[in-house]
Image (cartoon, rainbow, N blue to C red; front, side, top):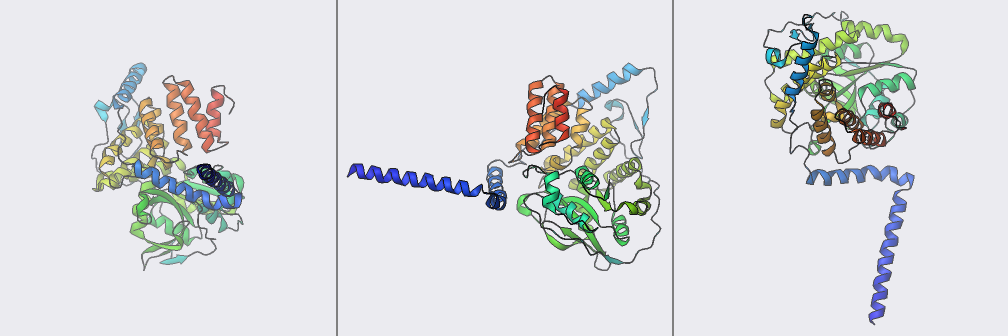
Length: 444
């Protein structure tokens, strides 16, 4: 009797193991896996974040003194050459140590001269022809750019775009420059990316027949997920109702957002916008952009806009984004010292924000540039590790590359190689990580 009981238990165990094996085999069948894998990833993420709250601890910059010392050494080395003045914003910032000229003082802000958009527009316009797509798991970048190109007759979709933009579907973000690059290299159309946009510009572009891609913070629509970054295509505006219509890959088709809400959420991404257009319409696009058609002028304009917000806004959350935006614009203008100062200031607001935008470095990597190019390698390492550790699936290739660069600079070559190789696991074939490995003599 005892032997029969043991046999039954053994058979039950074997049946359970067999059933699990069959389930796993079925799960990995392509038609099933494509439908269930993202749901499994979401469940894993929920469990991870429950036990590891991502905004529990805040990153705090710690190497301002090292940056100031490097600047002082540089200035000493070039003496007696007069100190150059960097016109990185409407407030001049001298390239001197922080003790002498830290952050911009409260100088009255003067609006930059900007070529006005002369064409009068109607009080409402609605463009049709964008083919709406609901995004698959974490695929708003490919889905949004697919929708934007579809307006001009492109018959592709997010699956086609995603094969190029996200070779590993777990990759947590597609950068704006990657979307522009995709349009210009994989389609017959052109695209332009700019910062510091405003509601009036959006309306003029739509009125002229150009849908606009924007990137914005996303909170109310997914309150249980915390703050996330998100792309949408704007295809309509209505002054009487005070809203834009967005073709949103998550919220749906013709998703109405009031002007104030769009502007508030758009601030989190330095008012970034992308325009997709046929080549024969380029002169029309540039004409609407006016002085912002020039990239350097546009970045200066975006910096001035952020600086104005720094002097006029009072809400800590908006001030965090304003300082961050100021740093991003200065970073693109190659004023890394000024950018690092601005990011330092932004991070002073961060601990008191609720909810904290803890995914920020998934989307906007400016602090890595600023801290790296001012010699603050440990800050780069700390920030990258914090960003990676806060993610249930550390599929953030940009953070891995910056971690590798900083590790290399402090002499940890093996750590750098491992970080670059990890970046390629999450984004196979990514030229940035491949170039870093080749520089170290490693075949990707």
